[in-house]
Length: 128
Image (cartoon, rainbow, N blue to C red; front, side):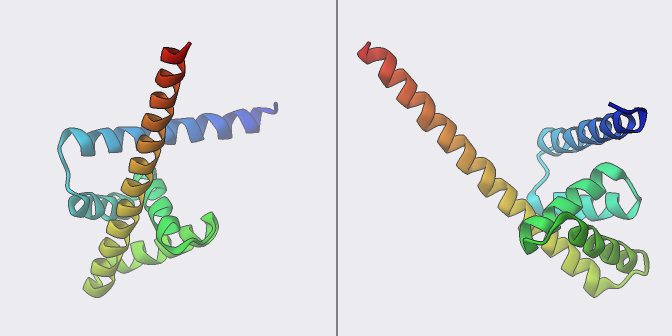
């Protein structure tokens, strides 16, 4: 693996750790989805890479667009927020909120699937 490849992977790992910290902060502070949406927009507007990564993923969740298109939408929303376009700020917060709802639904589905698999495994073990 080349030196540049290692740097890119290291940077991605660093950003992922920051994203994980943001989600942990949200959980530990019991942020509502509305609060989280506002924080994501504020963090992205401050050019915090973790919040930009989260914001891009939320845009992608809602729109179904590819990553690059989602980043372009996020850049537009950040620019509108910096210009204090209140309508676009509200739209961005609503978009992030919807993205967070989708994330929550995905997480609940994964949890239900994991529980079902654990129950199946426990049943198989009891039969043996």
